[in-house]
Structures are given as C-alpha cells and as structure tokens.
Image (cartoon, rainbow, N blue to C red; front, side, top):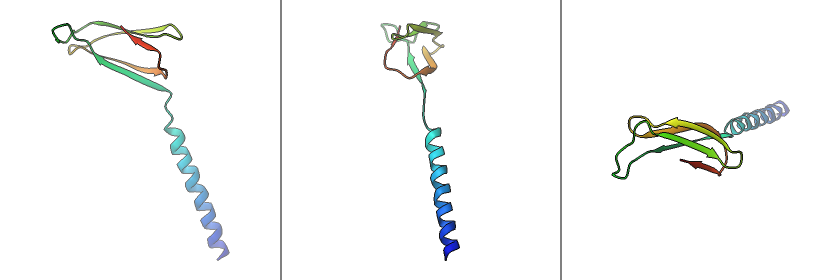
Length: 85
C-alpha cells in the first residue's frame, strides 16, 4: 500500500506541473488591431494608409488597407493607449 501511495503522490505532482506549464503557455504579451476603412458613402477604401500610434511611447506603425478596405496590425505590445488614424 505504501508504494501505491508514493505513486499517487508522484502522479499528483506530475499532473500539477503539467497543468502549470499549460497555464504559463497561455500568457499573452502582444495583441492585434483589425479594422475596415470606409468612405462617407460606406464604400470600402482600398490602399488607404492606416497608422497606429501608441501615445505613451510615441511609437508608430503604418500599413495599407487591402482591396476590401481591411487592415491589421499584429504583435503590438499590450496597452490601452493606441490611436488609429
């Protein structure tokens, strides 16, 4: 019975460590911003220049909208002080 208890303890520790690794893997440090560019008549604007600025660091990135007016910025540091123009 003692060996079964020891096995059970080792199994419990292994499951806990595995679960901890899954949780650590789930931590996110970057985000994305996606959107669409439309004109006043609600038509998509292709090839529009879109700039995102993080106000706290004054860093900017620029992209162009696609043929459907869609744009996307990926791998942005997390924050709540972005401005899109």
